[in-house]
Length: 288
Image (cartoon, rainbow, N blue to C red; front, side, top):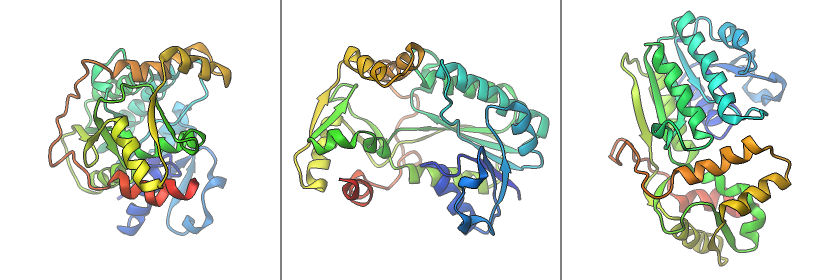
């Protein structure tokens, strides 16, 4: 079978790539810059130059694919929500015109709100575009990535875990590798009915609880600290982000606060095994 995957160097895509190759599949990699791929993979994959923000390129790159993993990349755009929606239109066109038998889309917890969740609203637009095709599509609504913790190493070195959400509100945290395993399994197995599958990680954690885990694993005190929205806005503006980009980021936290309940409850199907303790020891501790 021909399985096409996007962002094969990302937190999720890189693990999907490895899993598919281990399963004996020669995946087709859609890459904006194929030169960035580690040469060790060259004998095991087919690489197609493809900018996911180019609808014609996406259509050509996915021609003949039986299955597709679509992960919307970061696009340098004045309006991230509009950018995700635009890319969603490209993949929906490709799914329809190329008759792709099954598509797995990496979405997010919060996309079920459809509006009012900042940049996640762009993923909701992609869900809607793919659903409108009538083709078999599975949306993976993933929890908060463990790897997001590596975005503020300076704060962790100072013993502070900064958060825009309430510090005592539990939410699903998940290892990107677990998301990749779910995605790869669904790409490899034939199915004709899609829908939504949440990927919740092993347990819900509040930021206060995450700080306790990091204190133990890193052998240094870490405390959770709430960052007010206006302080977050100021910090994002200071690094040069425009207003639409700032509000897209702030809106993700604001939209998932009080009153939000995920559409998919935690079950044995949505619960994945990798713990924050294990991930932090393997990936975060060496960086600090």
